[in-house]
Length: 246
Image 1: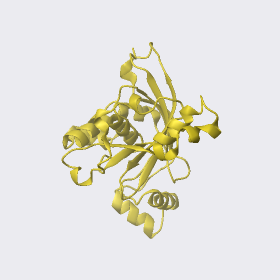
Image 2: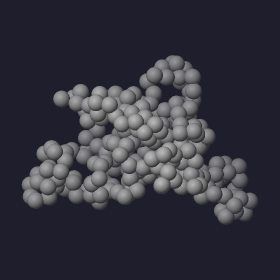
Image 3: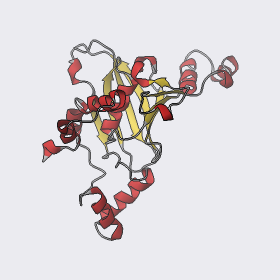
Image 4: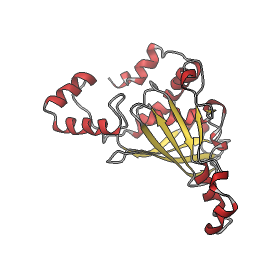
């Protein structure tokens, strides 16, 4: 049974159309880092770049205060310059020491229940600062379900779209890939095929069952990589590359 409150989130890849999104549930005692690994898994991010999560602290605070105070009084009572706009969380270890944000807190040591607590609270996942991927994170609800086995979480309920392609140049590059693979001819298509190693790519596809299988295994591999600096085993690589489907 799920002994912890269950947090339901809606997440969406930014700056790309058609929308690529997921709705999923996790236990409230998971860390911010584990939440990031779950989202990265769902969006086909392969844990090969740095990431961080920004909590939209001021925005969330004002939204919560709006339930108790008239909107015109909130900023008078709580001036914006007195409230931090965002709070950043990343994974801090020997590999990331050259990139550490001095104001960031360690995502591996803080639970999501400490970051968000009200429906509508928002966060943002930043992944690969070069390509500039951003995923908006919105807390939809917190609830309890004593009948739901905790081992079934995390789980994705629904979604649409494949996710990202690593090192393609961000949302703009992903759009170029989409156009080329729809056309299935021309110089760009051949270049992309040679680079990726395959000739078919459907960026509208999303397999809920397969993703729920992966959510039980992949985040642990990512935790080992980011938090312990461990290289994936051959078995892990086979899982990451979906050899089980071949």
